Amino acid sequence: MNRELNSGIPRSKSTLPVANRDHIQGPIDAPVALLEYGDYECPACGQAYPIVKAIQKRMGNRLCFAFRNFPLANMHPYAEHAAEAAEAAGAQGRFWEMHDLLFENQDELEDENLARYASALGLDASRLIKEILAGAYTERVRENFRNGARGGVNGTPTFFLNGVRFEGGPDALAAAVLNPD
Amino acid sequence: MRLSEFRGQPVVLAFYPADWSPVCGDQMALYNEILPEFQKLGAELLGISVDGAWCHTAFSRDRKLHFPLLADFEPKGAAARLYGVYREADGTSERALFVIDAAGAIYWSHVSPVGVNPGADGILSALEELQNKREAK
Image (cartoon, rainbow over all chains, first blue to last red):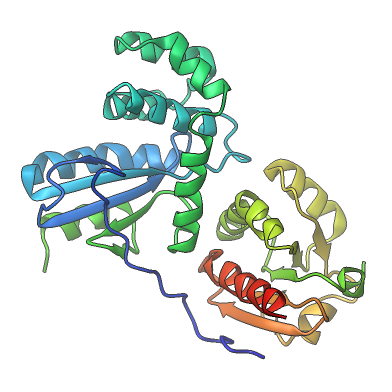
């Protein structure tokens, strides 16, 4: 029963940021929605990070940016705890500050580094580490991973622009967001 | 290894062109992470390419793969030919996915352009359909 033989590229489903569920920056009803599935230890995500920042700066309130964790934990041994550290910081109201520190320090993502970043952000570092070790955010990260894999995320970083998977690198993404048509 | 050893459970057979090439790496890395979902749906995953056993061993160790890689090495591409996914001009297989049901029949298949990672979505949908059918019985 070869239902899909030679059918080409699989379709990807529409994926938009979700209020009260996703970590978002900018208004949820902004005219442009950008969603990233990323891995804090992934070099390509690290390269995309400043480009996303530049896009956000240029777009201001016209952009809603959301980030979902998609750690390739077998390839990147520190990616899972880093993702959970961002979630744990989010539980203390500092997701984006931790997100930035993780991408700005991709070579230093061991647990003691995560604790140091938590302290630097004025968070309860021992709570953050305890929660990570207890797996408090494992299921949330896993759920993002599963949903991503179902939605056409095949690697990192994967961006969805206004709900549609963006095919192309971060520079092309910047061009598409900043100079549409 | 024979596929008939897996009779009674679905098998995901993932043909890919070569160890070490970047897209394959991503594809196998993705499957490595999503493997627990395949297993929850009762399925085994097997990767297969024309690379030899030693190459597979090194690749698998480097990427920390938790599923077996089969060597379609001698006679080269015999399994790929059997599934109709051998690329004569390149000497490798297509990037092709087969979901084989518990009775050993091909239930779903997909051939991707060689440079495109087909992801896991199609496989998961096929395995879910198979599970729903089993439960409906």
